[in-house]
Figure (spheres, one colour):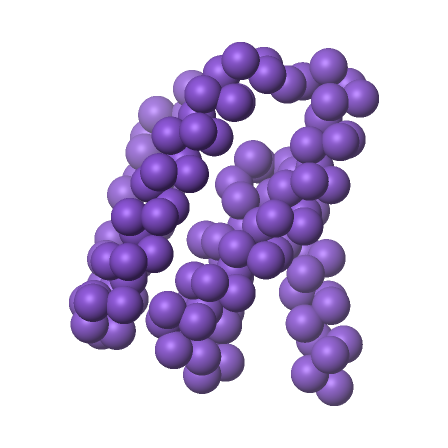
Length: 118
């Protein structure tokens, strides 16, 4: 049953990610924490999801000519550096603080999108 549930959730995350451009981590990390995973493991595991669905979404959007390769590659190079730093920091963050920080970030994004949709 867990396998079917994870596959179904993966389908939902993939649709949401390809539609919105959000990497899926905003759904996967809270979901994995809800399932009882420790926050560093939830974050690390979400990157497997992001890698797989990111490649799939990239191919689909590239076929539709929706990709600015220069901007994407520059952001990606910066993201590589940031990811290395973030991976080292996440283990030092208290799980309760992590959940609160994550919730505040998601709430701030929701408020921004609601009141200033463009």
